[in-house]
Length: 418
Image (cartoon, rainbow, N blue to C red; front, top):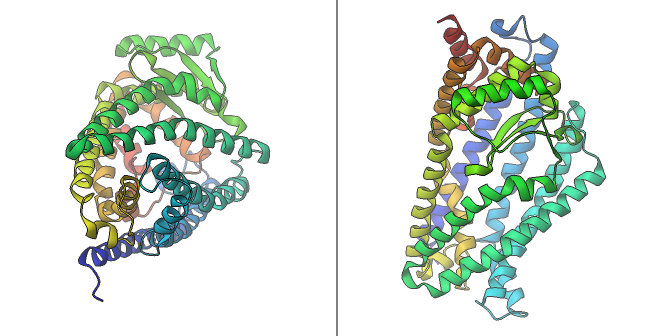
């Protein structure tokens, strides 16, 4: 029996995506390892050769694990689709629930999520308790890891099951234009989640305390006034109970916006450096990067749901991906399992625009704080987080949402000199 053209296209797309991922990762490992003993001269006065070696070894260890995850992920997609995994799970739940009903659909999707999570779990354990532990970053205990896992599962079920029911109901009740109603519901849900996440969900996992350092608080508040930015509060997150990595971020939506500093960041950076880091984050808001990303996400999701709407009634869409059962839930699973392989080669485009936005945010920070302070902060973060200074250029162009360290620092030095 001849293979359906779409089956062949899917296999070729999956093979190409998997092959390119493994090729890029192997390039990255070779390049980083090959430059392990070569500290870039630009960092010779701020980062030691020992720290550079540590960053190289850390990057290589993470990338090699990611290569195994890539291979396992490809096998898992094949097993669920052409291997008949989705069909078998659907048939199993059909003995319990009415086939094609809401309960059957939710059980099918939930089962796939659980199986995928179980397969991913050993990688998460190895990453946390072997790689992060080996390089001195892990502060997670086994009990906290388990508690986090249970909390994530509970929150995911509490949010995901009602959302999934709503999606399946709209798909069944709204006729041929169901995809538009699902998109509207999905967009509204995401905006609501952005608003509620800082106050309802994030505190389930971390403790957020008001920033107590009065001088740092005053400095940040002056920066916010100068930039015309309003936040609900300045908070310190107890990230040190899980990791020694440092960071800062803005979270929330509308009036619920918050500024969050990792406690590890406050321990490592000076007040001027923290101000510069926050000025960079404010640059994203000033240039409306958040809204632009949300807009791209919403438009792309609309296009994808429309595409699914065209495929969902076609018998070959199911059979060419290994399924005999036709249902809304089956269509969703097949579509979102096959999709990543077909759009993978668009990744460099997304990475490019992200890096351009990072340059814009850096320029904003340089104009609202001292560029030299941001340089010093970045160098400390590169060093303390063991970020490689010598990524493979092709790998970096394909994946990196932030510019390479040397390129970014060079631009900031130029801004400082100017």
